[in-house]
Image (cartoon, rainbow, N blue to C red):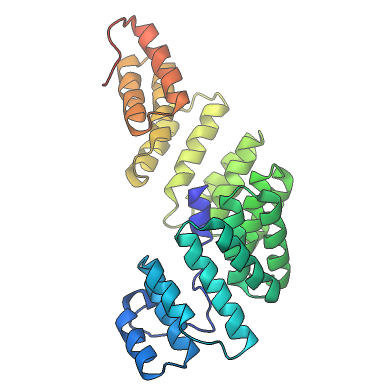
Amino acid sequence: MRFFVAGLASPSPNPRWRLRSPHSSVRSRPRAFTRCVRDFPALFEGHYNLALAELAQEHYPQALAAIDQVQPRSEDESTARVYLRGKIEAGMGRTQLAQQDLSAAFAKNPRQENYALDLGLIDLETHAYPEAERVFAQGSALNPHSTYLLLGLALAQFLGGHASQSVEASRRVLAADPAFSPARLLLGFTLYFDGKLADAREVAGEGLKLPGPDPHLYYLEAVTLIKQHGQEHAQILADLAAAEKSIPDCALCYVASGKVHEEQNELPVALSDLQKAIRLAPDLSEGWYHLASVYDRLGDTTDRGPF
């Protein structure tokens, strides 16, 4: 899920309050905002942007202090402060407080895209999938051009067991932005887990034709071919090799290649791949299962401790 959640990261926590610069980002400007706050202590935007800069650097106590030092002058500013407190609290692991503040901000202004995004994200992370679906659906209805909110809705529906609705939402995202990789991956994996393997392979194949395809699409195409029990071993191994080059520590890639080599009776190669998978992910049960199978076929009865 982490990849899809990363795909939902909002482009800016609140475009209205963020001071823009063509040469630098909020992340790199805490000193500038500190001076702004010193020179204009009543200016809400200065405190808000200082809090954003501290949040970007994971300076959570400083971020809270910055946003709490200013008195809001309007309902919009008050709501923005509550929202940003929720983001900071989420970063600090204060999930319950974060949900309360983000919920309050969203209730005050459900049209604000980022309020819906961050509330929906924390609902996803706490496995409150029906609530996440409700938030993303409401936010998407009020922001019909937001591919981020629509992707969030599709992810909440997938995790909540509503595969057909998730497929529909993902297809709507791709209709608006065919190059949006997280939506294509979510669609492909939803189809894969729903047993619609031919459709999943088609989605992956279409994505791989685009410039600079996401490497996870190679993995999706490979595991779909394996699941279809085809004999396209060369294609599968080529896809997995491409995925392994760009996906750090892809234990699942090594499990998949180990399965292919095992099927081809290339047992020493299969053994090597599966050992790599277990080293990368010792709790990966599928890797252990196939590793035991290869050991048995090799007739290995020696110690099978650390590789």
